[in-house]
Amino acid sequence: MAFKIAVVSGKGGTGKTTVSVSLSNYLQRLWGVAVHLVDCDVEEPNAALFFSEKEKRSVAPVYQEIPEIDLERCTFCRECSTYCSYNAIVVLPSVKFAQVDPNLCHSCGACLHACKEDALHLYQKQVGEVRHYKVGASLKISEAELTIGSAMQTFLIRELKKTIGGDSDMIIYDAPPGTSCSVVATLSDVDLVLVVAEPTPFGVHDMCLTLDLLKELNLPRGVVVNKAGMGNDQIYEVLERYQTPVLGRIPFNRDFAHDYAQGLLSSLDDDPMLKWFRRIMFEIERRMPVYERVDHSER
Image (cartoon, rainbow, N blue to C red; front, side, top):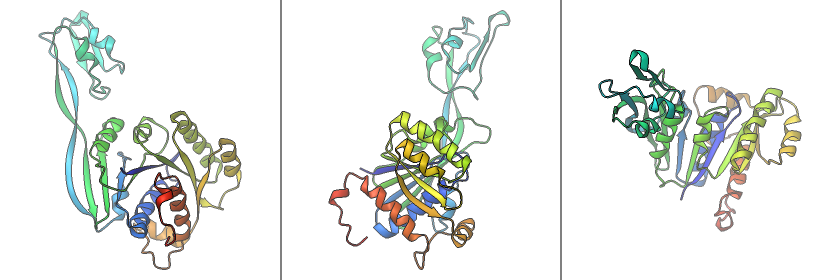
């Protein structure tokens, strides 16, 4: 069974995708494990951009089933509206008006259960698409992209995750930024959460929001401090209070930032960042169930 890691951050711009794609690159090249990188930032998926040699395997639209009201059968009793937790249904008996707002509907099916007149039927509305790629023999990449104007991020993430098989050794979820419902959907079945944070006042504040969420979800977690040494040491004092381990530090490196901005990943030759990511990989391995059975002598 694949070991699942989610890479999250309290805000955008901390280096979450940097860590996700770099880890995927290092893991499959240094350890030789089969890695599946899943980009769950469905509003702006960009992880696949870093792998120019990727081969597209499939593209499929994702549809949401939306109820529609048959005004010929509807008695305007308002039961469907009462059952709807998302305020997606408007019923005005005085003018015989009834309508479902597809932008608010979550396809929970409550209205279908409530209607005794069989006045509701379903139609399909496209909310995005899922794409799968393969890079060489040991790396897969999957992503979903939300249809412009849709607000169904959480629905699309769940549909994306349903398409991910269990034939890889490790799955890395690149989560959306923040602590919204779409992040919770990404975290639903993971074994370890890496929180990427910057050592700045804003970075620490948003990291705390994320750690509070992870504590509520009772998920194993650790923090990767990106741009270490550029801010202050407050982040480490806060992590002591949260009793959360530091799984790695990544110092700012201008050459690495320059290459990353051009969509280039490490070639492993004279790589100044390799030792920092090796440490993160070691801390991940320590938390894997198979750790005691792994030969570490060559790593």
